[in-house]
Length: 122
Length: 107
Image (cartoon, rainbow over all chains, first blue to last red; front, side, top):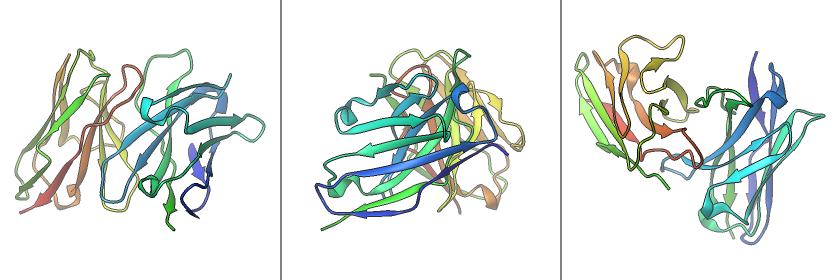
């Protein structure tokens, strides 16, 4: 079935980097945008950015520009989200989610990964 | 950037009640508005897209309406399993901003 499977939980120290993966299955990987959303403990959903898997184009929420990098590996149908210079307020559950079909009409995110908890603590 | 203002932040209602949540965009987003349900400890689940279209498999007691800047989400006849936080999200363009969320509880 169509699914996104993310990598496991991470514990990091302030100043570290973290790279979370999101592996797609059940659909043509390069046909759909992948979005990343995070949720701090007890807080709401925060959109971070998207990647277009067919060509690697990216778009970021302004506050994450320069500190978050989205990449993909088409051979393994996997997208990656890297956050650098981690701070304690980056502690959150990070989700990947399928977006619009490339070249198609805009659509909401119908498929979500299970989430990856990233804890930043000294 | 377009801001999304969702209200109320929480509500408490009885089983069988009709509950409504509003979401306001700071600029016209046409009908590029989705509603998600997030149960405690679970992944967000898409309920409604294009402001009023139910995702397949979503019970018909859920509904959405609106276009432009003002949107409404409703649960007709609230059920115990509807306890969750509900979020609106614009998807006309990046950033795909979410509303602040509405926590729905049973009285």
